[in-house]
Length: 593
Image (cartoon, rainbow, N blue to C red; front, side, top):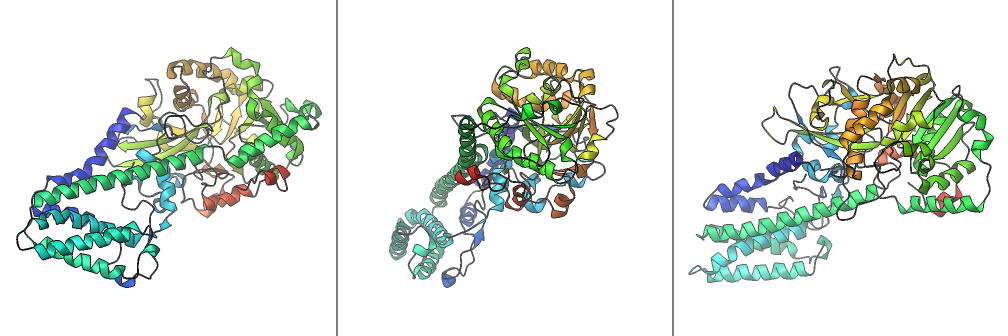
């Protein structure tokens, strides 16, 4: 995490410590108020009623998408020594820079009802998209009465040492001690409200009465204050620990390949060497490098995701016979991909699988770690320095080309134009009109994202010249003019930028994808109409059904991919309807996203 982001978090979290600046009895009562349970006063009388529904981390303040070392949604391997990370950039934003489109682009308006008002929610600075997910997956509290008992026990223990020292309060001291022992006995046998005895309501009322009397006595506030401070520190530490633990498990879940998909890949690989299927490259050799056909390029390690993207594009195409898909994967998944697309057909379209590890041209370039690099995704947290409060934050999610994309003109030397798709995209309409689009001399036709402008990322641009008002752009669905790419020497410019931005480590290599992609295509982006792609389906619960229906393609950018159990449920149906049906390997591996 950058020093700027770390310092920002530190300025946010100590706010609660201001309560200790108070003195005397009012300080003690303020602390006691913090332990009041968030349940109705009539709970003891209505013990048999259903427990309240609260957020799974109600009342906690936390912080973000910790994406320090690696970009957050594409990786499949988890770095040892800590929880999964997300690539974070947290630039300060000059107030003169408008972070939105002047036209009020509806695609960039945050959904407050779903993702919350991130200007007042620093949670994502520490725990990331876990905060969004946990807010949407509210749980029914089954231990609200147990929590009420614990709160009373904390307060009673704080007062008991002082009451025990008072002359003439022996009876109150005995009652307080007896109530503490009874509460401890009940809590030792109960985890949920259902485990509590039927007379718990009377015990709660009795403890409330005893505590009220204790509060009316003239006690040494410093002793009570000290005890409550200890309890508060322990409680907040415990809450933060559980938040970190939950966040770790969440990120582990979204960044690790599901067991069923791993099974599918292994079964397909084994089957490839056991059976003999006709090689697609030999059958359609005349098509594969013919620029008169419509060529689509995907970089992916996920056979299921790639098949859905290809199937959705074919099923919505008017002339599938013109479609040639070039699927570039790594050596580990190559044979699984080959076998899958050899045994499954997609109308009249042709699918060619390439092994990135076997492309000899890689040796020509110094690409750092010589491995497949699909699109990278980044969470960008922005603080407006014109605001007086450090909590004036907003968070955006963008995806850009990975390093492998910059080799497309070299891999497909005979092609003049290609459409590049990410494997987390679902196509809903025919893409034919993109091929007739006049890019007006530009290289990359992409949907722009003006929630982030280049001037807001100046810290990460290493002093390069650029237009600060230029919008960022998104990968996912891009139309690329390869002839213009070669004329502009985009690949050569990329290699020059790579030497400046990476220091030899994999982390810096992957993180450099953001500034390199933005700088390499500076002034070379043709802005596609926003209706071409509806993004945010991998992190925003508030995308409207109308926006989804009207989009030509859906982009599940973010952590919550549709093939994961943690994916956003209401968006999964758009993806699942393009899954291959009646595939025996999916049934045997229990693949049911």
